[in-house]
Image 1 (tube, rainbow, N blue to C red):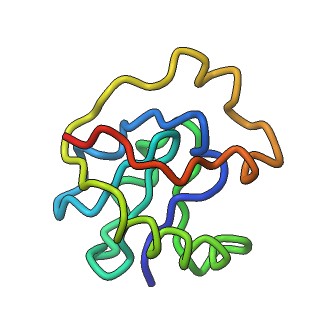
Image 2 (image 1 turned 90 degrees about the vertical axis):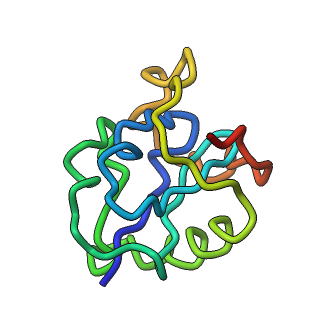
Image 3 (image 1 turned 45 degrees about the horizontal axis):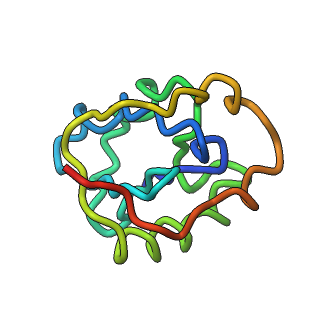
Length: 111
Protein backbone atom coordinates (compact mmCIF):
# COMPACT_ATOMS: atom_id res chain seq x y z
CA UNK A 1 0.00 0.00 0.00
CA UNK A 2 1.02 3.59 -0.60
CA UNK A 3 -0.70 6.92 -0.35
CA UNK A 4 -1.62 8.90 -3.46
CA UNK A 5 -2.75 12.43 -4.15
CA UNK A 6 -6.06 12.49 -5.97
CA UNK A 7 -8.03 14.86 -8.17
CA UNK A 8 -9.20 17.26 -5.47
CA UNK A 9 -5.64 18.56 -5.02
CA UNK A 10 -5.74 20.05 -8.51
CA UNK A 11 -5.94 23.84 -8.24
CA UNK A 12 -6.15 23.57 -4.42
CA UNK A 13 -2.57 22.54 -3.61
CA UNK A 14 -2.79 23.52 0.05
CA UNK A 15 0.58 21.86 0.92
CA UNK A 16 -0.20 21.20 4.60
CA UNK A 17 0.88 17.60 3.96
CA UNK A 18 4.41 18.41 2.84
CA UNK A 19 6.08 19.29 6.14
CA UNK A 20 4.71 16.29 8.06
CA UNK A 21 6.14 13.76 5.60
CA UNK A 22 9.09 12.00 7.28
CA UNK A 23 10.60 10.84 3.97
CA UNK A 24 10.05 13.91 1.76
CA UNK A 25 8.16 12.04 -0.94
CA UNK A 26 6.06 14.95 -2.23
CA UNK A 27 6.67 16.46 -5.65
CA UNK A 28 5.27 19.77 -6.88
CA UNK A 29 3.51 20.50 -10.10
CA UNK A 30 2.23 23.87 -11.18
CA UNK A 31 -1.23 23.22 -9.72
CA UNK A 32 -1.02 19.87 -7.87
CA UNK A 33 1.23 17.82 -5.61
CA UNK A 34 1.95 14.11 -6.01
CA UNK A 35 3.49 11.43 -3.81
CA UNK A 36 6.22 9.19 -5.17
CA UNK A 37 4.75 5.74 -4.45
CA UNK A 38 8.15 4.05 -4.26
CA UNK A 39 9.34 6.52 -1.61
CA UNK A 40 6.16 6.60 0.51
CA UNK A 41 6.54 4.51 3.69
CA UNK A 42 2.79 4.22 4.21
CA UNK A 43 2.87 6.06 7.54
CA UNK A 44 -0.33 7.98 6.76
CA UNK A 45 0.57 11.20 8.59
CA UNK A 46 -0.13 13.26 5.46
CA UNK A 47 -3.71 12.09 4.98
CA UNK A 48 -5.34 13.93 7.93
CA UNK A 49 -3.30 17.08 7.19
CA UNK A 50 -4.89 17.63 3.77
CA UNK A 51 -7.71 20.20 4.01
CA UNK A 52 -8.98 19.06 0.60
CA UNK A 53 -9.06 15.40 1.65
CA UNK A 54 -7.17 14.64 -1.55
CA UNK A 55 -4.75 12.07 -0.09
CA UNK A 56 -5.90 8.46 0.10
CA UNK A 57 -4.35 5.02 0.47
CA UNK A 58 -4.18 3.38 -2.95
CA UNK A 59 -6.51 0.68 -1.63
CA UNK A 60 -9.46 3.12 -1.37
CA UNK A 61 -12.06 3.15 -4.13
CA UNK A 62 -10.95 5.44 -6.93
CA UNK A 63 -7.43 5.99 -5.60
CA UNK A 64 -5.82 3.26 -7.68
CA UNK A 65 -6.37 5.26 -10.88
CA UNK A 66 -4.12 7.99 -9.43
CA UNK A 67 -1.23 5.67 -8.59
CA UNK A 68 0.37 5.87 -12.03
CA UNK A 69 -0.34 9.60 -12.31
CA UNK A 70 1.52 10.13 -9.02
CA UNK A 71 4.39 7.88 -10.12
CA UNK A 72 4.70 9.56 -13.51
CA UNK A 73 4.73 13.15 -12.27
CA UNK A 74 6.96 12.36 -9.27
CA UNK A 75 9.62 11.45 -11.83
CA UNK A 76 9.20 14.77 -13.66
CA UNK A 77 8.44 17.38 -11.00
CA UNK A 78 10.77 18.81 -8.30
CA UNK A 79 10.77 17.41 -4.79
CA UNK A 80 9.23 19.71 -2.21
CA UNK A 81 10.02 19.63 1.51
CA UNK A 82 8.50 22.86 2.79
CA UNK A 83 4.98 24.16 2.73
CA UNK A 84 4.43 26.91 0.20
CA UNK A 85 1.48 29.18 -0.38
CA UNK A 86 -1.74 27.73 -1.70
CA UNK A 87 -3.26 29.43 -4.74
CA UNK A 88 -5.38 32.47 -3.87
CA UNK A 89 -8.48 30.75 -5.24
CA UNK A 90 -7.81 27.33 -3.67
CA UNK A 91 -10.97 27.37 -1.56
CA UNK A 92 -13.04 28.11 -4.67
CA UNK A 93 -11.74 24.90 -6.28
CA UNK A 94 -11.95 22.67 -3.19
CA UNK A 95 -14.55 19.95 -3.74
CA UNK A 96 -15.26 20.69 -7.39
CA UNK A 97 -15.67 17.62 -9.57
CA UNK A 98 -14.06 17.02 -12.95
CA UNK A 99 -10.80 18.82 -12.20
CA UNK A 100 -8.55 16.29 -13.94
CA UNK A 101 -8.89 18.31 -17.15
CA UNK A 102 -7.38 21.26 -15.25
CA UNK A 103 -4.18 19.36 -14.33
CA UNK A 104 -1.10 21.17 -15.60
CA UNK A 105 1.82 18.92 -16.62
CA UNK A 106 4.22 21.77 -15.81
CA UNK A 107 6.52 21.48 -12.81
CA UNK A 108 6.11 23.72 -9.79
CA UNK A 109 8.76 25.92 -8.26
CA UNK A 110 10.03 23.25 -5.86
CA UNK A 111 11.72 24.10 -2.60
